Amino acid sequence: MNNIPSTIGHRPSTNKGFILLLTLIFMTILTVFTGALIYMASTDMKNAAPQSDDINLAGLADAGVNKAHRAIRDDYSGSAPSPGSRTGVADLRGGDTSPSISIDTQDNMRYVDSANATINNNSDQAILRTFDSNYTNTRIISVVPRIRASRQTGGTGATVVFAYTTDGTNYTNVLTQILPNSATIVDYAGSAIAGLSWNQIMSSNFRLRAVRTAGNRNVNIDAMYLRVTYGIDTLKELWATGGYASFPISLSGGTIESIAITDEESKVHLNYASQALLQNLLTNLGIASASTKATNIVNYRGAGLTNPFDSVEELQQVTGITAADYTAIKDYVTAYSFVNSNVYRPAGPRAPVNINTAPKKVLMAVFDSLTLGLTDSETLADAIITFRGSTPFVGFYTSASTADNTYFYNFVRNAAYLSTANPQPNEKDRVMDNSDASSLIPYASATGIPATAFSALTTEFCYASNAFYIETVVSLGGRNLRVKTLRGNDGTRVFGTYVSDTTLSGWRKENFEL
Image (cartoon, rainbow, N blue to C red; front, side):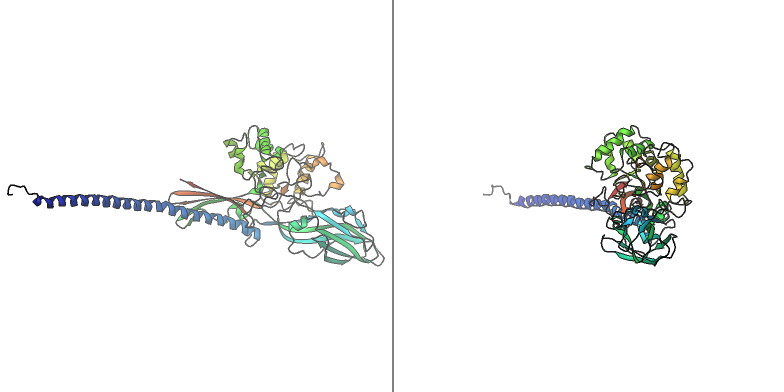
């Protein structure tokens, strides 16, 4: 038995080796796990800084957009009007006297002129509707119905009651006037109408009515009209001049580098511009094959707007429009400006251009697209830009003074560089006839301007704007964020790209830059 080998003494060293091996494996795993945790924590900390910067950059961009929006909204609301804020006053003429009852030569009361309509009996009614439409995008400040009237002398006199209705049936009296014993025409003002909107004025149910309620003498009516005071938009307002802020602006550890605001009404509408208007704009911008590319734009949107442009960026999908073309065009066209459904000469709808904000190339395109065109559209465009640099246009027509060039009718009448020679209609008549979207022009019955003066190839002018493009650049920690968005003049963010489109919301686009 003493010769049998013994292994009992070796077992402890074997167990120790196994335990050492397990310890080594555990420590290795622990080291790897700890290293992974340290790496993940370090990575998270590194990632957290840019993410925090992104959030702060977005906040800075919001501050820039809101500052721009306040400049637009305050001017519109009048709560903090810009130094360049202006109002216009227009006498809206009516185009339809057909609802009148037993009025002699009833159409004579559409204009302020030498001819009169006559009320012979107390049962007669002088009624006027379908009013001028080229101010419908402005902000109504006040509306006052007015009537120019007199009576035949002698007899027991005449009393006129002047009223309006918004539903075509129920009239509200605004003036009861005993006419003096004189044939001299006098301009009488009724009481102001509160809360009236352009939609109501443009409705065929909105009417002015004059009746004789006492006396036995004939009442002569020279005109019935609405005197409307409204807000306009110009390049002298703070949103355009940038006077609402000085840049750069330090805020929340970052900087608002710049804010730019552009009036969408200063541009040509992609969904409503004619082929001729688009072609002339492209030509003025120096784009080759302008006729073909303008036709392709019209074909893209489809007859009856079956495929309307929802954005300017869609131009890049139009056949033939190159990247260089798009860069040249994009700042001169829009899909968001006001579309007037109440235009009459020729029938609309069309998208007017704000004469106070449109750039030279757009103004030239509008004039180049007139029937027969102009000999020198550039001279007229330059004259408009020079004039509005000191005094913006406030409307199309006033009967008060032919020397007041703030009304575009007078500005054109006094423009010696526009021809009055054949072919008819001459250059002055062509410009004026296509600058007013209403059913009337002040001199139509006097001059007998032919229907060819009214051109569907161009568009008319307006004096206010409803949509603005805002672009702001902010910086933080060596990174820039550029934000582009649309805002309305009254704070709304819903914009239609065509008539009856109420689904498109104001957009916001962000782009981080190094």
